Amino acid sequence: MKKTILSLLLVISGLMCSFAQSSTGVEMATGLRSSGKIYVVVAVLVVLFTGLAIYLFTIDRKLSRLEKQQER
Image (cartoon, rainbow, N blue to C red):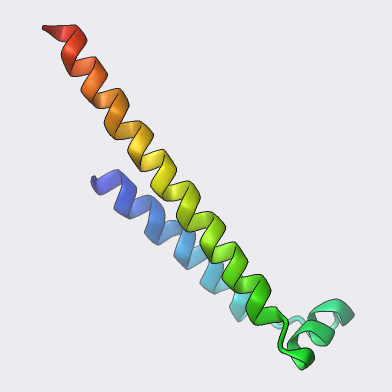
């Protein structure tokens, strides 16, 4: 559980650092930001990373349960 929380915090902090960087030289980012579509891109990325984290967490729980059953 601690590893999962730590992993999520690292992913979130990495995303925050990437958003904090200035992207004035990138025309696509400026265009997306000016039209408001950047929020859609960010929302999709957040949903994807959240889904991936939940999927990995459930696989880890199932694997741990199988390992415990095999020890008996």
